[in-house]
Length: 285
Ligand SMILES: Cc1cc2nc3c(=O)[nH]c(=O)nc-3n(C[C@H](O)[C@H](O)[C@H](O)COP(=O)(O)OP(=O)(O)OC[C@H]3O[C@@H](n4cnc5c(N)ncnc54)[C@H](O)[C@@H]3O)c2cc1C
Image 1 (cartoon, rainbow, N blue to C red):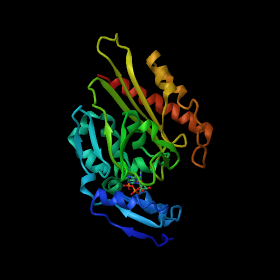
Image 2 (cartoon, protein in one colour):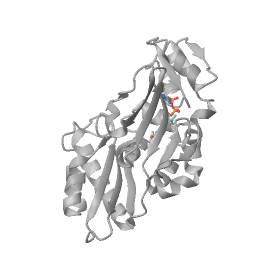
Image 3 (cartoon, rainbow, N blue to C red):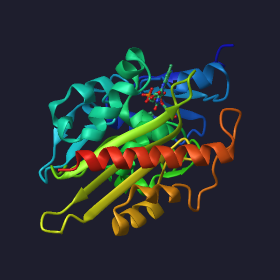
Image 4 (cartoon, rainbow, N blue to C red):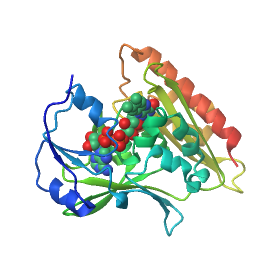
């Protein structure tokens, strides 16, 4: 099967891309690395009438340190480019997960902005960015806004991004040396996507009697879209016990499909969260 015919635009700048998006053609889609969009166009699950190809726009690429110590990752930065950047060595979670995503080709073409915008319920990176308290910076011809990633995902392949908006960067708060992190996922063997995956960032303050004062846990593959397991976070902060993983699906309608039914997936994610917590505890400074 091949995609249906579409109009193709290749703007020379972000401003030109935003002007095209402002034309409010409901069949318009942005094309970045194309590793998610093109396969679903070929199977006709997506049938955009117009593609705005932003993949070559250098102004959306690159990793920069922010004045407050945080990190700005341009939306078109690929997994490979991010992994090669020395700034991410302090974000142990990213250093762990990026080499495991897809294969070399996917990591060389897939972009961070595309991974966030696509809202694949089983993608690896969104869960990690949730655990890192990431923010999404978006622009349109009307202006810009910054959205906490925890408020960005709305459901499977659905976010709060408006049709005329472009993700321009992902921001991470400054990393602190006193935290430990880990990502654990059971992969679907054929696709490599997570059947159930947990990204954990925990930390304890100096002088806090060894108590944990930070716990952020992103889950993927389980709900309609990646989410923060706040019930686990609260329980872990009060007990410091990885058994808090038992709350991984509290308040979530767990997905059920031919790869894993609801009961199995629920058991699977509890195990992944527990393993990620145990690994993070070992790594905490
Ligand atoms: C063979 C294969 C294996 C893979 N394995 C994995 C895996 O193991 N784990 C995993 O997590 N992922 C996996 N992926 C998916 C891959 O990570 C994503 O395809 C990729 O990150 C999406 O980025 P992209 O630049 O290719 O997005 P595109 O395909 O170009 O776009 C995806 C969607 O995001 C929108 N979009 C893109 N950029 C922007 C922007 N800046 N602003 C607004 N909207 C935008 C597009 O309009 C489209 O709707 C795999 C993909 C393939 C093909």
